Length: 412
Ligand SMILES: *Cc1c(COP(=O)(O)O)cnc(C)c1O
Image (tube, rainbow, N blue to C red; front, side, top):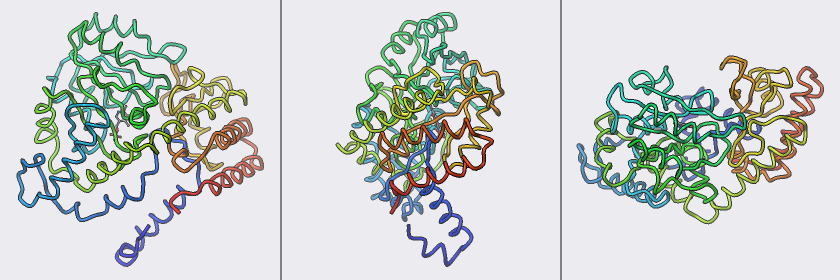
């Protein structure tokens, strides 16, 4: 990481960036929505492209001087379309939440009904939470998961028939099972709703061929680019050709001004990387590693919502330990593991305290962790939770996790 100029101009920021690099290198990153992007992607994000205004779309801009910008954005679009098998991609949304907002703006009017997964059951804020625009201006009906942590498709169908939503959303922030896009489309067709598949979490798995694709089923597909897809922070909204104009208009001028073309260049590079054979192997390894982590935790007597995971993440269910997600996430941080507290289905604790911890394998897989390393991570987690008051045990565990980080170096 070259910080030469930052060091000269702003030593304080340079110091914080260097310390953040050190934190990433020396801790085990299990936050399921995070990853480590490539140096090539990071380079693109720090280029002169940040200087350019390019409102509009390739070859239809409101500003002059967009010749190179047009090529970059068109390439990013093309690569997204090809990778996900969708007719149209708008690569301008600044984030996943905005990628979703574009769909809401394109097909809904305030007050229209949306059927989506409840936030405390694994859904996302931008799918209709009352504190988000999606919940403030639309009538939201929620489905959840059953006691096995799975979507009950018959329940989704009943809710759809009863409430006649205009938009059905599938795709989640915390769901460890494969999503059946075909079933969702059948339900959408039955009630005349649009189907949005928000693949923010599983985009890399879909690109790598280890999770079924929503292409051919969903009218709209949204994603973040920074989770399993391993690109820069941002969003993409994709759709069938007939909705392309509606989506483009919703993004600009509907909800955004100038696109972040330096980030779009980073997205283009990440999409290229994700189309290569090595990425298939990466995606396969993510799932193998997640399963090894889950098995290790089960073998160490821990509970996991829904049991074995089918993708890159899982939620540790702490209810029988009598400990909370909030406290145990802090204990894990003490032993060098970063993860976030999360509600479990029917959680007796508040969303701020919770009875669960969400764990994901995408980031550690990027730095080369293998199944043996994941079993060691499982041992560290289980031992830390069982000995959360024992400082000397925790100190030893911190050494153990540092040893793993040294074995699998990052950005060296
Ligand atoms: C992360 C996520 C988003 C939002 O992404 P941001 O870039 O944080 O706005 C949207 N939908 C789902 C399902 C997500 O998991």
